Amino acid sequence: MNSENLSGPVTRGRAVFIPEAIWGRLATVADDRGVTVEDILVAAITDITSPATVEERIVQLVRSGLTDATIAGRTGEMLPRVRAVRRAAHLPANRFIRGAIHDHERKTA
Image 1 (cartoon, rainbow, N blue to C red):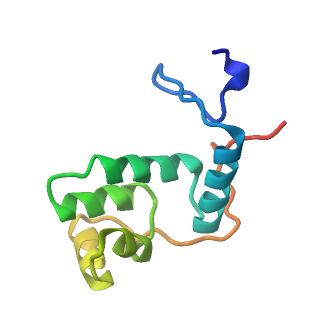
Image 2 (spheres, rainbow, N blue to C red; image 1 turned 120 degrees about the vertical axis):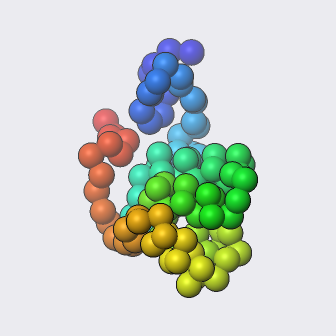
């Protein structure tokens, strides 16, 4: 596989091929949430590799850029619980920003 077939950034010596149609859907979801495709992928991987406790999972999802409301929906926890865990970890709330542009988002030719 050559680099012309890759979508998105390549880091840490590993490359993952993501078909353009899938990348497009991921980019749309990321734009709607005000995060990057990389954030969406990290959150998906976090879901699959669930940490030992709900608190750890919430902290990981916050660090991935998801909002408290999104995390509550994914984990099934109540919003006040997600906020309490985030605050206990001394993490700021992630804000939903429609149309936010990130430096490391995929550039189109």
